[in-house]
Amino acid sequence: MPAGTLYRGREGMWSWVAHRVTGVLIFFFLFAHVLDTALVRVSPEAYDQTIDIYKNPVVNIMEYGLVGAILFHALNGLRIIAVDFWEKGPRYQKQMFWAVCGTWVVLMLGSFYWVLEHTLRQIFGS
Amino acid sequence: MSSTIENAPKIYGGGPSIEAPRSKRSPRSTKTNFELYSWLFMRLSGILLVVLVLGHLIIQLVIDGGVSRIGFAFVAGRWASPFWQTWDLIMLWLAELHGVNGLRTIINDYAERDQSRFWLKTLLYASALIVLFTGTLVIFTFDPNIGQ
Ligand code: HEM
Ligand code: HEM
Image 1 (tube, rainbow over the protein chains, first blue to last red):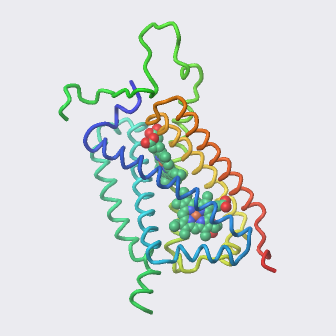
Image 2 (image 1 turned 45 degrees about the horizontal axis):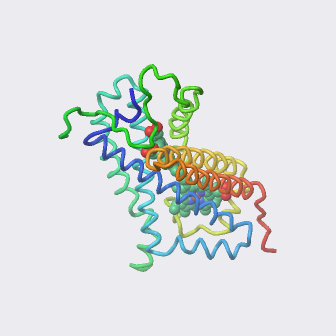
């Protein structure tokens, strides 16, 4: 069977597109992230100044977006693995896709306050 | 879907192609099991990355005030422990190799000319060497007293 046929059409195709887009996004973040972490070898000041960027409210919101991308890629990745290795996987792939979406929404709502706490405190004080 | 044959594979120019049946030249990819191992690696590394990366995100962004407390002193505290050094090292290698392998597939899918494929992959592998080398070096040579 040619590679890729399993994931085409409707939910399958959109989850495939989203999986690809999130994977590329995380990959580019990782490149920048290893380089920013490498500043610990330059000086504590250089590292702290760069990490301050992560504490900027706009960047903090982007971090929430990164969390969303990783959560989707991870949950959907587990679904792909289940489709490939679990004998009933292909039959339930559509239900599993909606389970991925549901779990994603719950985890995004649950992490909203914690990930953005830094920004919320800056805006609303205390 | 409007197409007559649902789920039919689309073959784009330049992508991995299917040879005509009984053609004399067998496709190069069948000579080794490389694609099979890379397929398996994507799944095994994916399972491990769920724990490693989500654990990392919970530590960095959720508990104890999240991003507010990150700084040189925080990293020094974490890398004083061989456990977190090992965690970060395994996460570095697995995430980078998983990502590079995924991007290799994407380049194969979209870059049609042999030349553009060659240069995109050269760029990809060069970036991977930089990331793996720098990341590994930083974990092994970290010095908490560098400022003094
Ligand atoms: C915005 C979210 C993130 C923050 C705030 C963050 C923060 C940090 C910090 C402070 C370190 C220093 C060492 C430590 O404390 O463990 C680190 C290292 C590391 N992080 Fe992250 N991280 C984030 C997301 C990620 C993601 C999504 C990945 C994987 C795709 C990742 C992979 C790594 C790796 C591989 C290292 C070790 C770097 C090296 O070897 O020099 N991080 N991160
Ligand atoms: C969090 C846990 C993760 C899981 C469970 C996971 C799982 C998977 C799986 C199962 C695939 C499909 C491979 C295939 O179709 O043959 C995949 C593809 C991919 N992953 Fe991940 N992955 C994870 C983390 C990451 C990270 C951290 C990165 C970036 C550094 C990444 C980047 C990619 C890319 C670029 C692809 C290729 C997408 C494509 O071919 O359409 N993944 N992942």
